[in-house]
Amino acid sequence: MEFQFSNRVLKLKPSAIREIFKYASDPSVISLSAGNPAPEAFPSKEIAEISERILAQRPIDALQYSITEGYEPLREYLTDYMKKMHGIGRDFDNILITSGAQQVMDLAAKSLCNEGDVVICEAPSFIGSLNTFRSYNTRLRGIPMDSDGMNMEELEKALKEESNVKFIYTIPNFQNPSGITMSWAKRKQLYALAKKYHVLILEDNPYGDLRFHGEHIEAVKSLDDAGLVLYAGTFSKIISPGMRVGYAIGSKELLQKMIVCKQGQDVHTNIWSQMVCHEFMTRYNFDEHLKKLQEIYLKKSAIATGALDKYLIPKVTYNPIEGGLFLWCTLPDGVDMLDFCKQAVLRKVCVVPGNAFLTDDSAPSQSFRINFSTPTDGQLLKGIQILGTLANEMITN
Image (cartoon, rainbow, N blue to C red; front, side, top):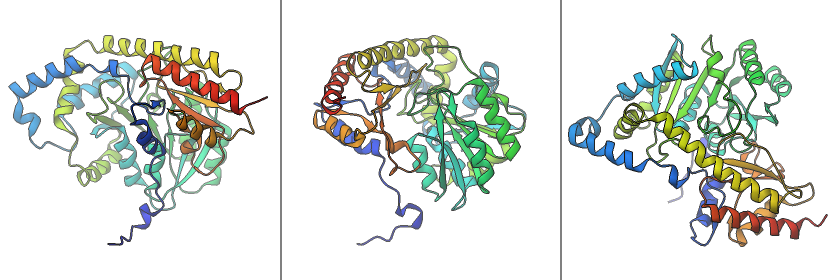
């Protein structure tokens, strides 16, 4: 049968990262392209204990249908935790448990965007979110990144020029893919501009707990006294991505519409997963767990940056990072980045081409993304050494 696809999905292309995963599934390939947590970061023993207890004591609660808003004990605990620990949540806010933070992006776009509406994004930005926004036939406007976050002059220019901006999408902590952290000064500027132009901010914070250098910076949502910020959090990088538990904190009016949309998607997020997340936060030492994760990624990032310094600098540069899972590497002008990535694959090393993260993925890019959390220490060293050899062959000056 020949299918006539909807206009909404006709121009959508597969995620470049997911396509690269096909190569990375070869056990002989060193994948520096994923965004997965380190295998040693999973609290598998604790999850097994919690699951056994839940299924022995409350099996029906875990196996039966539940409410769309989410598991009430988790919602209540997260509401209190985020307010006490991060100053997030006001009287006008509510919380919705989602199937990963990715669903927050989808529900927000579905609730707010008509075809042709504008979504302002950092350039570069996370491909999964960009594709979600594209799926609703929005128009993406990218704002270039400075070393401390998106360029605020360019952001205000876009807000002045565009008449139908529905929201500004930002990943302020250890941004995917650039690794950049938005400064506190720019977070305040961002909120002030959103207030001035009456535009929502969609703040995506999957990596905020993975800081291993520098001082903690509060979320943009902590500034929110007018219901202008929708905050997306997740357990994917701190407990398990496979459990698919995320959450949104935002205006009750917006969340109510997102709840209705979610009912048409998946009815509710996996209840067993929600119960596990709640028990892990309340019955185990959650702060110690986060410290362990930070130590893991501090070590792995040091291995990766040490190898980059040894084998690629000065021919290939990279952004310094304070946390997260990614390094953003840039080739000198005149070097074909796509060819570099293809040649790396032929040598059994996968990285992600930088153009995959642009609002216009046909635009030129000199950068590529490396993930340091998923490979073993040995794979990191070997993979980056292979990239260094390739760089020396391709970059003669």
